[in-house]
Amino acid sequence: MKEKEIKEFVKDRYGKIATKEDSHCSCCGGTGDLVEEAQKQAKAMGYSEEEIKSIPEDAVFGLGCGNPTALAELKKGETVLDLGSGGGIDVFLAAQKVGEKGKVIGVDMTQEMVETAVKNAEEGGYKNVEFKLGEIEDLPLQDNTIDVIISNCVINLTPNKSVAYGEAFRVLKPGGRILVSDLVTDGKIPDEIRESFQAWSECIAGAMDKQDYLDTIKEAGFKDVEILKAHYFTEPNMDPRLAGKIISIQVKALK
Image (tube, rainbow, N blue to C red; front, side, top):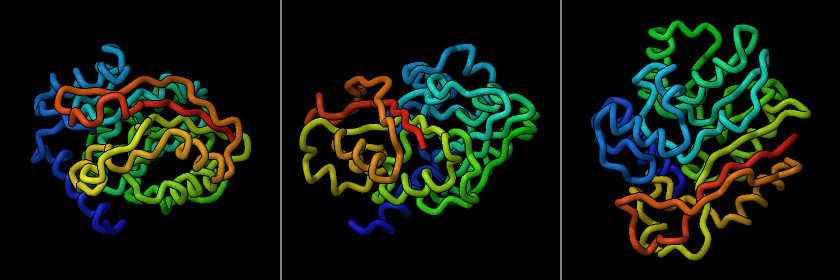
């Protein structure tokens, strides 16, 4: 499978999710298409009722595999970058934590998602957020400008994770930190699934072996790489061949 073809398929699917042409509201295969279902998915990933109600309704798609803002220990005045910001759920939650003197930047490769996020920001009256169209393997940001990077079930969507983490390291300030929620594997995934475009867009086919994933972060230059939370991932429509092989992790590392 070619990297460009995977990326175009993923971009097309998430564009349809943004415009509600695709009813799947879960990154990994959910089937709900209502606001209630998206909020249910978000709660299952660790978002509280209070958090969900505090942000624009259309920012919640039920995408992701964790709640990175809950563990990032964000402080007032920090500049935060969200890799693969979608409708803006994590950007808006982070914006509340960093306050008026802080700033949160969301980068997403899907035009429709960026447009949705910008609309949500305008309607929500957010003044300390910005959304940029771009790819996580080629971030539209200067070196050493970000205090904290967060990401939610997005890095596994790229076939070139080492480049993505290299870019994260580049834009992060010395002493900065990352907090990433992602899916990894424990055991071999069937080739049929690895070669499925749909499985790539559902965050499964691109998931790396857990240790390889951690090594990729270290090889990008990060230190003190640590898994803060982990649990085996499952959902109603998951292929039975994946049982006990997919792990949701939340990883912290420092520059």
